[in-house]
Amino acid sequence: MTSTERLQNMTQGDPARLIFSFAIPLMLGNVFQQLYTTVDTVIVGQALGLQALAALGAAEWLNWLVLGMIQGFAQGFSISMAQRFGAGDHRGLNQAIAASAGLAAAISLALLVVSQLAVKPILILMNTPEDILGGALTYLRIMFAGIPVIMAYNVLASILRALGNSKTPLYAMVLASVLNITLDLVFVMVFHWGIAGAVIATVLAQLFAALFCLGAVLRIPLLRVDRADLIPSRAMCRLLLGHGSPVALQNMIIAVGGMVVQAVVNRYGVIFVAGFTATNKLYGLLEIAATSFGYAVTTYVGQNLGAGFLDRIKRGLRSAAWIAVLTSALITGAMFLLGRYAVGMFLSGDPADVAQSTQIALRYLYIMSAFLSVLYLLHIYRSALMGLGDTVIPMASGIVEFAMRIGAALILPVFLGQDGIFYAEAAAWAGAAVLLIAAYYVRIRRLSRAEEAR
Image (cartoon, rainbow, N blue to C red; front, side, top):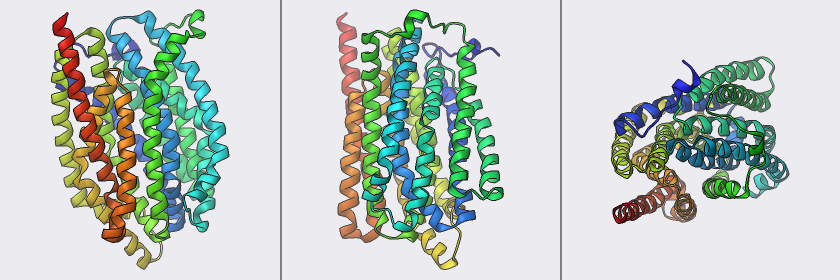
């Protein structure tokens, strides 16, 4: 099958089938991407103990701050690509891709410099315990050194997804996961490189995934960047940054809120941090289907908006919302049945300490799972707004998440004790979901009235 045959026009056919079939490869790809970050944690937790696991937890939100900004820019850039592809504007598509590549290179360089300078002061500001500070710092310095690689993969994968190709990023992640797990075992278990070995394996796997996606992009015949496109117009740069910057800022705001929560968690000691980290590592697995449906919805809405098919957008969103709710219900049931085994993968060491960390992890996991449908609807409606070209309301939803997460983290423990911190995520999801759902219906009504007036 050629790269051209893998492209998918989502302006024709049953919306539910299109969204679901597009999301499945993304879901599998995200499973493998989460698999190798989870395996990192399992190997570190089992081979190096609770202290090393806690070090990864202390680094988690700061790492996500940078990764979220990268993913935000990449996803924002892809909105213009999807709209131009849906409209059949191949010339504009190539201009958008060329400008995205240049902007991504500049952004990754800036992030690389700033992250290396700021990482230690931020970890100290977050109340990171002294006995895990060194491990967290090692993890983040190496991970941030790979920022250009991570940016390259995300932008290349976003190009493919914007054109309806969700399978190539899947293949890239499957192969990268196998490579990462193999290198994890060699670097940590054989070479005894500790936390550094785990993160080096991750960066090398991301490099492989980026090169795999680059090969696929170069084989697509309609993608032919002219020499003149290498110097993008200011208008194109403004458009791309107008889409990408709010999404990146939204992710940054969410991450900062998470860092505040982590600072509160760090006060409770290494055992609590280890338990909290075990469930946070499962968070990525719980969210996989939500982010996959989100990418599918952004591409679907973007292509249909470009083609002028507003009724298809409405039908697709109704289908996507039902699919998301049913999927979240299945995952919630699985977590209540298998949660103890899941968190147990990450924890090792003194039996008494492990027992305490396990109970902490389970309480957090059960609370998070009970509210999972809210998170899934949040992703559906946020992605729909981005597909419609609105990245400002999604950014505002990040501010709502920030306020709700911090408010819950600071206030609820006063009344509920340590368990209060576990409700911070659910509160953040609920606040953002209300804003996003309301904003989607307001915007879709405006578009409907504009269409009727023509």
